[in-house]
Amino acid sequence: MTMAEELAPVFLMLGGIFALGLIADSVARRTAIPRVSLLLLFGVLLGGPGLDLLPRPGEALQNFLSTTALTMVAFLLGSSLSLETLRSRGRAILALSLSIVLVTLAMVSLGLWLAGVPLGLALVLAAIATATDPAATQDVIAQSGRDTRFTRTLKGIVAIDDAWGLVVFSFVLLGVGQMTGAQEGAGIVRGLARDILGSVLLGLAVGLPGAWLTGRIEKGEPLLIEALALVFLLSGAALALDLSYLLAGMTAGMVLVNTARHHDRAFHEIEHVRWPFLVLFFVLAGAALELSALMALGLVGAAYAGLRIVARMAGGWIGATIGHTPRAERAFYGPALLPQAGVAVGTALIAAQEFPQWGETVMALTIGTTVLFELLGPPAALWAIRRGG
Image (cartoon, rainbow, N blue to C red):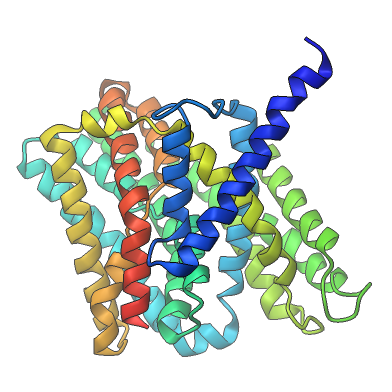
């Protein structure tokens, strides 16, 4: 096969996917359908679950796209944690993020245990359920075009709730490991401390010099190449050091927005360049979805999905009440935080490795419900943003 014959399908695929991105953007502007959902549905229709016209992306390509897109999302979410926002909305962000994670853990684990699931497995599944999809939530906020107290609080919650979720997940693994005798607790605590502290330090190491260096060539406005340099340097360093690019990117974004005083819009270029990566990411993710996993969930899967929905609603209401948010907003934080994707699958892989006796159940349940929440979560989030704002 010649080089031209090898490359032609790749270029046709890329051109077709970007055309789908244009269609999704156009339809979303005229309807109440989130463009993230449209991209996923296009992927399902044209990929393996449907017509099988899109080639399955290799693991390397999928990892590159997801890492790049999510690092950009993390930068933008970190930028929502400015000192001004934290002073005015810090209590609400902290109360809501903690409440949603803890209530989800408590309700899902208790409900599954009462349904007959072993306690250890119920706790592991509940810890996985705390994860949110930052990419889908951030894009729904951007699509809504709303910059309100509700959306600013929501961005702050999404920026840190996965961090709380990872902490909770690590301690659940520690506790369940002690219950089953599967692992040593000290090793998990050390690993957790290393991951969190290391990711924060990496974000500082990239964010502090980036805050000073960017926006100097063209005064007050960072260049595209500067934004890409920050994203790829941080992503590469996080992967090389086996750290969380989400936590590192969020930290770097928070540093930039609070220290780069000479910038007019520190994240202008990242906002522009992230959409093509998200288009590729979501269409190829839809093409790789295993709808058979959704069909095979059974009663336990239905209970898990239902408990997670109820827990998000209850946790959002409780946290909003503690955080003294306006009463009219309180019912909408839970629906706005339903999307779930990559972080959940990543934690499920870790859990399956740690507890191989439950590995098949954990992976099937997580993948199946991730399909469900990725398809139903963004419309619920868009509805909540329009009502809650």
